[in-house]
Image (cartoon, rainbow, N blue to C red; front, side, top):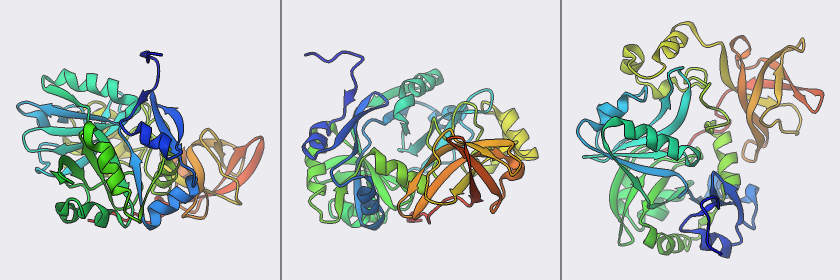
Length: 365
């Protein structure tokens, strides 16, 4: 039967996922593995202790070509891009006129163009947004894999020695096993690692070769989510969205001082006001007492039962060793150590505001 436009898309590694007993689910319009036979907890542990390989080919990869590309893209984000050196990447986000976050993204300076990676669920919106800039916008159809974990450097450097010289948020184009690829030292797990853009026709061969290393195993969306939650990293659509400002989400570090002060980006009025006066709510880490996790949508109350916020992401942290959550609470309740209550299935469960991230981040700086 022919595939219709409404059917989920398949990444170039789909057949490999099926062969390796991946449990496939529809994620943002793509058939993606949520986990393999070992299970989410084992895949999570694999990444923290050795290395895990994630297929992230569903992410949008875009090249921006044209004169003053960095200055033009800067009009849509509150980060400095004109000062971004060649070979460096920067985390940023599109803001809307109300000061909310339209999407978060990675922008890399490729020399004579910008390389941009956007979230799968927002790729159509983001590409349309960038087409307003009077630039040549090329949607890259290469595959994208992520190798994350303490063994990542040894695994990749065996095929591309220059990878070992990269520091966190640095990127280069080089040969990987005889194929020209873009290798970027970054990721979404809190561990050292790389994201590698590979021509579609070569990705399965390269992936199989990489998986021959004894320290590398496949991992799916389930482990990717528990890893990023422990690392205190926001998930678009859960922890950040069109109503959430970067100040509320503790993302001020991604807005360089000159841009914060000068403005000139969508929503600058709200963002600058919150920088000066403080936001009415803040993203915090929350540790439920006991072993029961508090997931997205659970309301947070003060000691008198007044609703002061809600959980945006939550689950069990395998490395942390217990349930963890992120969510927004009224600013006056956001201090570390504050006691709160979680309203779970009609019952009030005690919890405590704790510092983010939940585990130490292990980036190579």
